[in-house]
Amino acid sequence: MFIEVSNLKKSYASGAMTNEVLKGIGMKLGKGEIGVILGPSGSGKSTLMNIIGGVDRGDSGEVMVGGVEINHLNDDQLTDYRREDIGFVFQFYNLVPNLTVGENIEVVSNISKAPLNVDEVLAAVEMTDKKRRFPRELSGGEQQRVAIARAIVKNPQLLLCDEPTGALDYQTSRSILQLLERVNREYGTTILMITHNEAIAAMANRVFKLRSGEIAEAAVNQVIIPAERIEW
Ligand code: ADP
Ligand code: MG
Image (tube, rainbow, N blue to C red):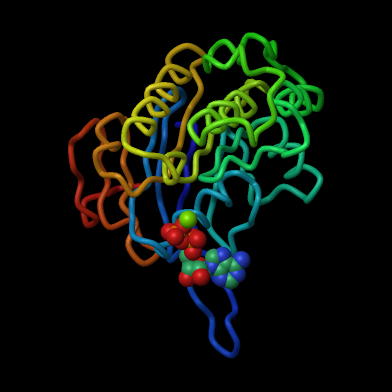
């Protein structure tokens, strides 16, 4: 398995209390698969994804990605991992406002070891004609296409998408999801995506339903596995 998380725990201090956000998460995702994390607000989805992406650290448990236990990396190693192996796509695109579309992608391409061609990824997201535009001149869906191009230009092993269609209307969301499926097919990129939309789960090889920091239910190729029968 490409991702193997076991017994992952994470707490945040809140005043005199501790808020246990992840209470022993286990999940697996194979290379080249699409995984979806579902769950209500505050259930720990982003925390889980941020730990897998090397943005945050778990308190205990194991997080293996591509054969490396990332919880045991030092800070420099974790930064390298995050820069080289992981692509991120966020709900609000997070493009650099004073750079053009092409420049937003080039910046990432320049710090990557194995970048794809900037024009190729722009073509892949059907934004070639917007290369010299600024983010403010684009619609939300177009900005998300650019954010996806920026995330894939470094040819990441893993693409992490935190509510990538959360700010988009139904039709635009569909086209963004189709684009992510195409990236998965054409580049073989493993994708892990957080969403509130249960319909999106239909496109996933594996689905993980979080509730209050625990996996309440999983599904592998649409076959539902209740929590008590999950063996990872
Ligand atoms: P989700 O993405 O499912 O909405 P999050 O993972 O963002 O949930 O948050 C889960 C819980 O952890 C929430 O109660 C949130 O307030 C808390 N939390 C998340 N990040 C932090 C942080 N950096 N410091 C303190 N509490 C946090
Ligand atoms: Mg979140």
